[in-house]
Image 1 (cartoon, rainbow, N blue to C red):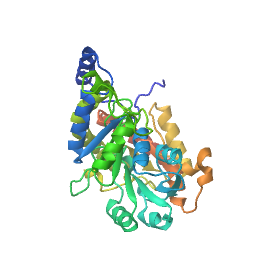
Image 2: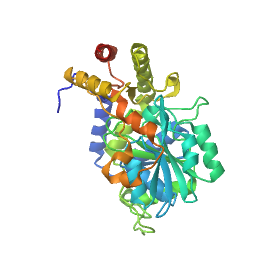
Image 3: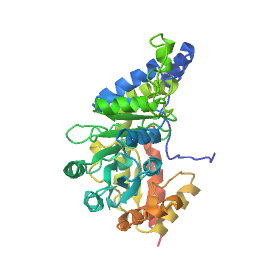
Image 4: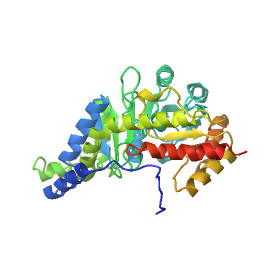
Length: 379
């Protein structure tokens, strides 16, 4: 592992996490059971939705969302070209065609409602929105558009746990289905894990069945004597979450609001220090109050300047990243190449992700900004 002085992300783990893992081990039941059920109930209450279904990771959540909505061969799913590849891969996995939409602008790298409208065809079944970096998409416009065309809305909320609208509605409660990731770099981290939330009883029943092989009774039910056998009613998957990760998730959920508030404080320092850099764009200015602030993106004036900054920070043992390459530039997705993605391509070549995590000292933010300012001031 590189010896980073300032990593891109870090865990907010303490004795509470150790204690709940030890408690699960002492109970000697690791498969999906009471901890998972409690995590689901607490997460649903937090988001303000009727159903939450814990799964093995965020990609599994997206796959189950497509399956539950009946998206299949010949269907089209509009989604952002700037996103992690999971949503695009899962569209292909169910036989659908991912149709890529452009971002609004470098200062708002979320899916452009105007471009969505241009991409709708008779085969379009759903729109995947991704709340980039923890800032919400333009959901009012997107919801109105999708409602007018009879399209389902899938929230890729993997960056946005704890984000909310100005009216108080939480990310995950803004579409037909929402998908969350609890990967190690997320605001709520358990290593691997995810959650699907929905207000629909029918969708929730289907997702729960598909999560565990299409079976009518779970191992936990049989272990407790609540069932003696089972049927397999449809072809499903093994996308269950285990008890250890669910226990970790419950502790992490209790820390989430405090951690997100700390992230917002750190982002405000970044904005103050980087706001005067010539030619640079810091996305989502003025929108931090309701954001989960998962990422700290900064957009350089040129691809060359981005590379210079990344190299200088690496030399100082400060980790950076890129969120994200334009998906259509990956070898596997070139066959889905489309016009109208100029802003996405330009953004992906100039954006750099700077370190941000809830336990990050303010002095680290100052150090990152100091190096960045020095590099950008050199002709």
